[in-house]
Image (cartoon, rainbow, N blue to C red; front, side, top):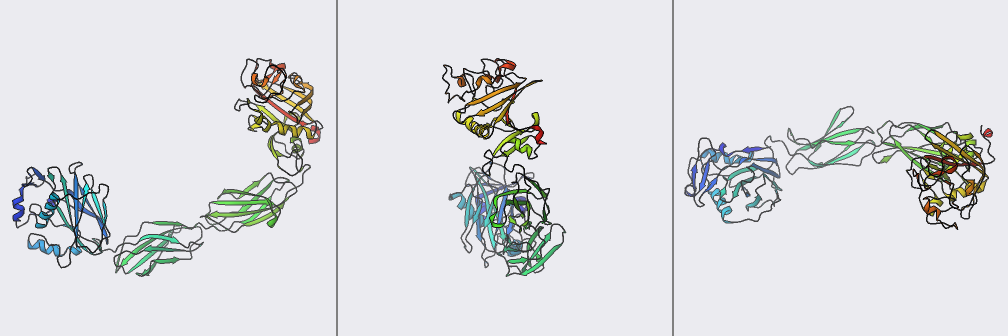
Length: 608
């Protein structure tokens, strides 16, 4: 409710207050607001404030509102006093005024002051404001007041305030409220209102508050609320399924503040509202509250199809109720003896998932659960066994090729050939019969190769872009079996290769053994045979020049190089670039290089 009161809405008093007459001189023009000048403060002009009214009127409070030009008043003074039942909100004035005052208990807020005259109460309040400074709380526009007091409450507000909220008042009680604007040499007209708490202007009961949902299950919940302070005869709870739109209402007594709702549809959203009832009247409903009962039902028909040595396709029938995800848990073994547990989360619309990188010849158990609303359903499960492979734990890319992998890319290999910690490598399955394990690539200069010893031992970069496998892995792979080496070079529309029948990296100082060249790029690597690996911070070569520092790379330098494939990318001077001397010379940095190895005993014909 918003009751606005302008000064011009009030009529003259039929009787003149003698005190007011002495203190105030009344002036009014046809086209202006009534003005009153205070004779005790020369030059003080008094005008009515605009749109004085009351909003948010409930059983235990209300909000006083007004309007005024910005910066006109330094402060606003509000007072509040409970009207005793034996007093009544009497005002100076006519008999009609007196009769109106007696009925304010069932009326909206009304202004008890007159437009031109001034009552004794007003005169007393004015004297208090003019003579006594009350400490003001600049940021406060709300008051929580002790009930049952007959003392006058007073608050001084800053000139920017345009409302003041009264709280914790007695239900169904009348209060006299005044409002005054005050500034240097300026007072507003005093506004005096009589306001009743309790029922609103339409006599509807006060609504409940603090709606809470609890004990949520798949098909039920409990709704609770806080009763209003004013009397009610009961409550009505209405809940509506958002899908079918059929509202269901349940009435409860005034002593109840909870209600259990049952037979709800799992996974559906419900709109719940609660209203107070007083006789035949209902309060406004509380703000709309939406509850999503997202406890899901269980997916069904889990199957594993297209099982190979390392992959399996999972299919299931989706949950009927609303969910937001599926959790897939799988591992080798069965029951509590399962090993290598893995978990994958997929979206609510997914009903199939491809498992990869499984161990050949292993029994797997898979469980799938639906999740929603912070809860999971019971799990459904299935079991399958992967197929056997020629090489269950491939040591390099040639064995992956023999296992049936035909596409180039990243794979997992086991350098020791037994179940243990695998490493990821990049396999070239297309060049010269495939089966090549790539250990170096330069393609765009995105990775810095001018690094220290630790990086070159452990490896760095991205397998899908520029990278160096690492000397430790190179040593492991080349000592397990005899390897051949291939170096592919490309620049613009040109390409060349160098192939070596012998390639090995030793454990001590990662010394290089290489020989048996053939190809189209020329032999620039045999010069480095028997060379130890050097980096900018680890150079064991006995020569005067520190080659790794001078030529900006990590390599098997001698004095110093004919090949420098780990040099600075795109640098064409001082022999510091990506160089293969027998193809492009020492002053040309090659755009693309790839170094790869394959067992010497491998024959492309056996891979089919």
